[in-house]
Image (cartoon, rainbow, N blue to C red; front, side):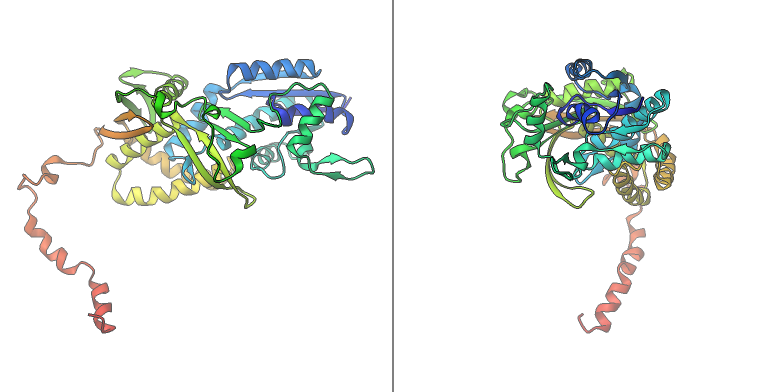
Length: 405
């Protein structure tokens, strides 16, 4: 009996893969794996029900706590961002792939399968992990490989063709030809794409947003939130100690009700395609903002300058799903050296879609009121005169030599 492990979200692409595995690829045993990294409970239940209806051996893995502690928190330490939005979908994919690897080893799988298209990023992220850990197991990607033509050969699937195929095979789906967008959710962010949303100049309808309120529905009174950090990660909200999972869940609610966390970007995908993406990242936006503010208080100027480069490199690797890349480990060695000092509190004021840092405190603060105050005489300002005279010396010499003075 041939066995395939299918990474299963319960959505259109992965649901269509199930009959395809039987009809076109000849697998007798289909093992579907859904990894819960913070999707709505209804989506998890729907995936389980569809898997049963479609006759697979299904398992759901609750990886929410692991996702926050092992993936979101490293992203906080590295101020994880890609082209202006908190990376969220990308950091969940290595964990999902790891759970698929566990399943494949447990059942002695002959192949993996996933529903990624040939245009997206997830094919790289998932397959990197599976090929790194189990290079002997082949990977099937039906959406990328295309539909089988009557006369032989294959051609790419369109979303409309997938919907028609699903209907013909009794696969219940949520998409329609009118509301064709695709949604991916985890605890750290929610991405919405597809259909008219792909058009750079299309105004997203309010109905696509689920985690964040529109400005008209947000409270008129600003909300003050105090985030406590230890060793570079959040540990409390408004003085209440919480687990990592509880912190993310609560901050999603607090930020979301204040309209904080919507991001609309033109994103450069790994294949070079430029695409329009809409994200909701209420907890991530606020917690990353607070983390940066605390780092600015406790780190030296040179550390901050260098870490900005480290963060960009880390974000690029995480976006590409290269979770086991040695450079990522090297970058984290530097980042983790700093984080014990990133301990303290940051106060945010949230109102009408904005989040503003209004306070920060730490025993590691490099701020000294006596030295910085204009009312203090501790710092002898006359000492600056010699430094000022030599400031920009080579630049001034250049102007004199070139006759531009």
